[in-house]
Length: 434
Image (tube, rainbow, N blue to C red):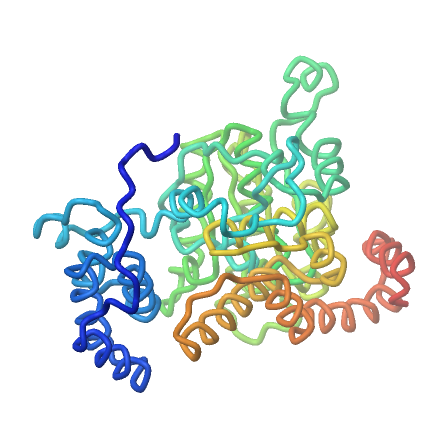
């Protein structure tokens, strides 16, 4: 709506008082002297030079966004009522409102992305914490179970082949109880997710739990291992006992190579006993595992005890590869959604980040933001993150998946007993990594 307030012309710069002209000269000589710049802004407001005052206060906020005096002067220069002391002291729960700021300057600032996003495209892939594949800092301990969540596979950007495999091998039988009973399919099972680090295995496990409408408990070696003899085995038993009480429940064994390492290579008797206990719990010896779904993740499946992967335990294996093109776009959109950006050419960025993990892509966005921030500090003028920042960050970062594929290639070529790593071999041939 057009501004209907009467427009009063501002005094010209030539009409500035000698004091204002002197302060301008001092500010030009010491641009980082914020109190001096604020004093100049105060005098400009008193003299009716509101546009000039806005420019001076904006320079201060660029270096000290939380300065209370600067915010008050900006409000006065913009014609808004000054904030009350109580409002100044109240914490801002949501941080800076970039959406409101964009609307305010929509005719001046270029659009955030070069091309308009696809209407049917999901803007999220994973939460910043899941991208590194290392588990959620807020995940439940071995004795606490998360209630069924709202996360679904549809929230995972791209990776359609992984979704199809999960649907065919794991989810479809669980969703059709009549067919399951007809074919004698037990409501139990195990699935091992493996692949390079940082590619979203934990996120996918949570999405599977959401698809099943099941509770979720995440287990790591820290939850189980104990210095006292017998306590590690007891902890492992309690994890599964809790899951049975809360069935249907997904038990997620994070870093399975640590929880279920090959016993032939384990020198410590306590660890061997812990693996034995895990095997017993997976078999449901003396207990009914109906409704308990076991998902496990590892970066090094060749270090997992072979007994864990026999039929009836973790008998299904799924390779989780670096995000494909749609997934990379979704991840980048997610990590840029709360940052000040303008004219980002996502298509170009997605193209040059082939082979990057989700964690690598998050690092690209973080590095680009850091470069723009440092540049703003040096120049004293806040600027937005642009395509150049992101492309420079992507070129400076080496994909963390390369080291994993260097090791996995040898395993797939020379230790592929029973076709365990056929999917990996197919991918290596397809991408020319063999």
